[in-house]
Length: 377
Image (cartoon, rainbow, N blue to C red; front, side):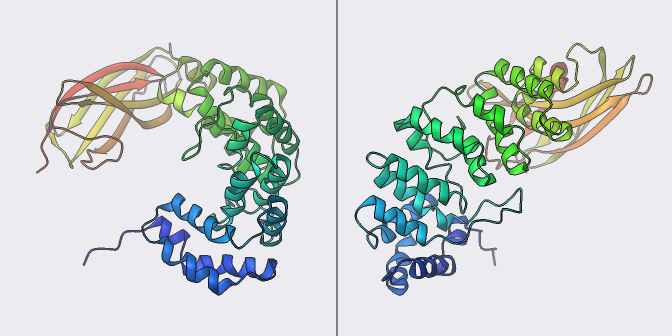
């Protein structure tokens, strides 16, 4: 018997979770009939994907609330559970069922009740991140919303502070695109980078990684300025810097490498590069062995690139992390990795034919190895 596949949407939205939501609304809003709500909402979950389910839940709550938005917003606040634990500092995202106030704030507050809607998002994000729902306000009212975000950057609740960074990210997964210049939020990040909570600093680092794909020099300059300002704990800032530069590091950006202490021009020799077996079958494993040497102690960040064969003759590559280490003078560094050539990877498809592996050290390609990928056996 095959294992039943995990369903995130069923895990998040089911009779138990929506029963909790119904109880909250019934306790907070006089006349809200929890049983009637559940009888309507539960059958409608079928056939809807995750975000569609959120909209459906909001539909089923909306017509049970007041028609005018100010009163509706008051009802939504009354139905909110207690805020997430303010004593924590990370990994407290909240429950998806509490996204409803954000959906309704956009639907009914965006045009005619901007300030009341932003007040609602401020309260709601203490229960579940409103990062998706602040973005329509940034697009419709950029100046006014940024003024509010400036205030929130100094908020005493770290979930509200995190919203300032997460909600303005230029490449937030799943989210609506924000139309403001990606560099506009930098003054907000300048304040938030010194935050005492990892939940906020991780968001800032992810935000900087987003910007690095568009404006790498600005990111490097900003990170250098943060180090000079010394407002953040050095260990935390070092972690943030590595996290913010991860895409540039994968791309071998010299400035990013240098900021992390890896010289692109370091005198490093690739002594040996082997892949066993050759050929290797799709779905099979092969052992990659790399030997590096240097004349003096040298920190190294070693990656390898797999170059894919395409039936149309095109070529593409993917970077795989290997090792951060230091080469000792006179003692070669031997690295070994078993690589599985997955035939069902989510980001690329393997095809039989000639392939190539390149060794990248401190962002610089030191050598290549051609090999053959055979059909799955």
